[in-house]
Structure formats: structure tokens, C-alpha cells
Image 1 (cartoon, rainbow, N blue to C red):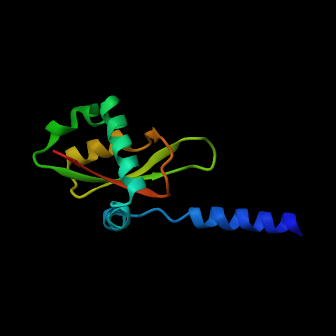
Image 2 (cartoon, rainbow, N blue to C red):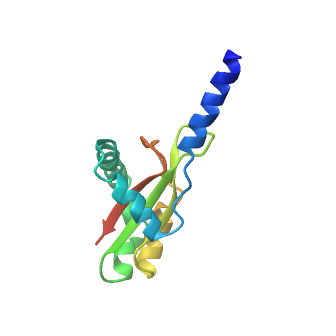
Length: 127
């Protein structure tokens, strides 16, 4: 009986952690707005910015020159069942142009440190 209770608690915990991923920019932005002021989000966001800068992820493909104006991205980070790392599973942009598509390609699929909660949505504005 005790083992069954432990198994049920573990299943309930993993089901609660497996929230659905945002399916578009506006739903990703809504998730971001709910979590952006949390201390865990702030720490993770700073670490991710350092990681991105270290590996020059925003420079891949020379995206900045492809269109004028800024692009705001919503990076949806999730953690596959297997493995210790999380991944930038989806990237949504507030505009649809060559610059946005280039940044989406640069960030989608990037492995990263597991975030403090899932899914975690990072907002990035690219000049």
C-alpha cells in the first residue's frame, strides 16, 4: 500500500510539471508575463543571456542585417523526458520577416540548462 501511494504521488507530480507548451506568440507572451518577475525566472534569464552571449547565438546567420527594426522573441524552454538538459523547443516572433525567421532558426533546438519551472518562456528583443 505504501509503495502504491509513493507511485501515485510521483505520477501526480510529473503530470503537474508537464504543462502544455504555448502554441503561438500571444500564449507564450501570457506565460512570460505571469513568470517574468519571479526571482527564479530572473536568475535563469540572466544565466541564459550569458550563455547566449558566450556562444554568440544571436550572431548565427547574420540575422541582424536581414530586416530593419527590432524583433521580439518568445523562447519556450522545455525538458524532454530523457537527458539532463532542457531545450529551446519553440521560438515565436512578434513579426514575420527574414530577420525573425533567422533568429527562430538560430535558437530552436538549442540545448540549455534545465529551468526552475516548466515550461519557461524567455522574452528576448533583438535590435
